[in-house]
Image (cartoon, rainbow, N blue to C red):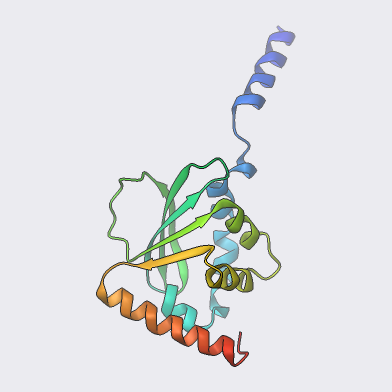
Length: 153
């Protein structure tokens, strides 16, 4: 009986993915930490990401796509859930990133700087949905670039 239990435990260990290896779980675990620091988010980023329904698309290291619905209110994440590709929820923004970039950001000592660098070099792609969101995104993006130019960030 003991051998059977050991064999079952080994099989589970081989076939059940480790939670820390799952990018969606890892990001979900960071939500509370992010929310604790959301009050420090610069105003131009609040304008960019403060009141959104975001479809986050992550391309995993294995080449799979994972879809996450993220809702922000006053820069705080109020909803974070994995959804199917075809789930419709009136996203105001679509954000695409690969798993390696997402891990670099969440493991960084300065995630804001990592996020901005990844956005600037095209590792994160942000696409607003609709005309109003496009205008809002464009204005916030210009403010962010001017802030960088003058060394505010």
